[in-house]
Amino acid sequence: MTHKVTVGEKIKIREAEIKDVKRIASLSEQLEYSVTNQQIEQRLTKIKNQDTHIVYVATLEDEYVIAWVHAHICDSIVIPTPGIILGLVVDKDYRHSGIGRFLMQKIEQWASLAGCDSVLLRSNIKRKEAHTFYEKIGYTNIKQSLTFHKKLL
Image 1 (cartoon, rainbow, N blue to C red):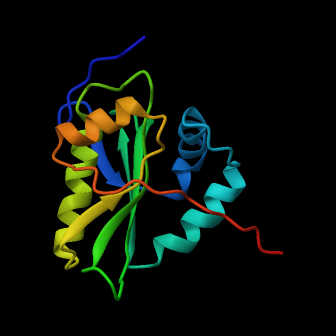
Image 2: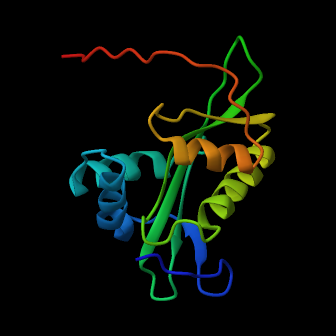
């Protein structure tokens, strides 16, 4: 069931806090990221003290977290400094209410104030609905690539 809510009236945006760990982990699972509360807590604790990272949550009036976004400023020698979205999840029951758009605007403001000239994100090829969302809010697909991973011991 989709809930209709209004950003600013019923939805508040604030920086993530340790008390939000359980909901951040639960929302992450909606996009098939398997993370534990402990992992989220360790990672959030580490990045909260770094000026190059920001994590915002969207909450209902009772502080129930219904969305989160994480971004990082990434200096590069080959491109001007972008803010990179590392994750964005809106609870499936609250999508299509403007929450994702508002969180992205908050990230864009944060990145601009931090001296970034752009915001960059990657989206799984199978998330067609997300691609449509990003295009609607002004993002352009500039590249398709493969992602490689090597586990370090």
